[in-house]
Image (cartoon, rainbow, N blue to C red):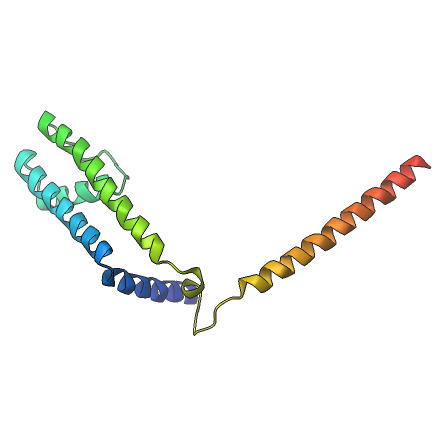
Length: 148
């Protein structure tokens, strides 16, 4: 439970920093615009309810695609193809920008304590060398026994 709390605090910091970036804000506005355009289109052309159109737009752009609601008109299907291409491009750009903001040291820190990855790497390298030495010793001992 504590791990989830720490994760949500870290994600909250990340989202706060994300909103400060003009590029990310622009992509967020574009994403909202794409959702709005989808809602207006499907309500007008397919005559779906607001909830069904919102659901369809989110499920489609989230690449889930349950298939329980599908466009029935040819215009709706053609729009859906373009909607997916444009929407996924915007979402991809949004997550790519979000990925640039992630600083592993800061993201993994808690109470100002950041893990020292260099020490961990050195310790693991030392352990790997010890294991390699043990394996080499075991192989040479087995080879010597097999020769006798």
